[in-house]
Amino acid sequence: DGGITQSPKYLFRKEGQNVTLSCEQNLNHDAMYWYRQDPGQGLRLIYYSQIVNDFQKGDIAEGYSVSREKKESFPLTVTSAQKNPTAFYLCASSRRGHYQETQYFGPGTRLLVL
Amino acid sequence: LAKTTQPISMDSYEGQEVNITCSHNNIATNDYITWYQQFPSQGPRFIIQGYKTKVTNEVASLFIPADRKSSTLSLPRVSLSDTAVYYCLVSNDYKLSFGAGTTVTVRA
Image 1 (cartoon, rainbow over the protein chains, first blue to last red):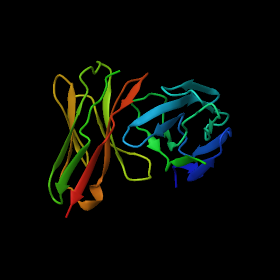
Image 2: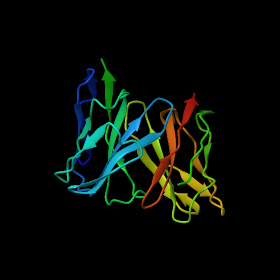
Image 3: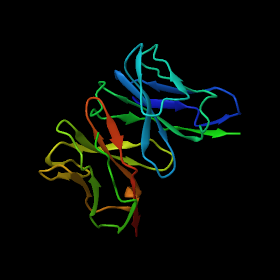
Image 4: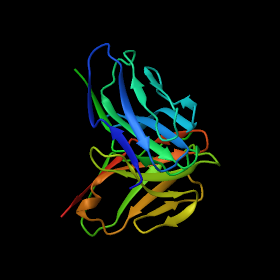
């Protein structure tokens, strides 16, 4: 089955701790994205990557970091600088790196602060 | 990029047609309109995309008037399984803007 996997499904963070969310795709897509979703709000773009070893900040990148060392993988680190990290995090991919391309989303990771 | 505005919620009954309108007054020439469906605790799923006039696929239709300042997603003969949040997205090569979503509740 082709698709996008995210792990873990739930993640708990302690104060001052960095945590990393995993995103893997086997669709052979060039572009990958990270979004944050808060209750009652739409999706907000954190980071995106159009090709391996390249990524750009989205609208709310502060307190987050990413890497894109392999085409299949785009992990997101939520750093201690992100003061309000509790949210539902969604990873997506698209065939090419244009925003009007259809995006395929993973099942999401819910991050909670202890 | 155009800011998108959608109704917060809509109620319907099984077998009815549901129409959700998204406003995007400042849409630019190179912007596309895409709709996604999201069930609780899942990632959104692509429904339909359009640029102008009307687009239809096996699950929905998308109506876009000539001025493109709004778009309407039409779901024919909804069932209970169509209860979900529907997002309007305006995007071009360089930017994207999701609406806040419309919660559609289908009742028996």
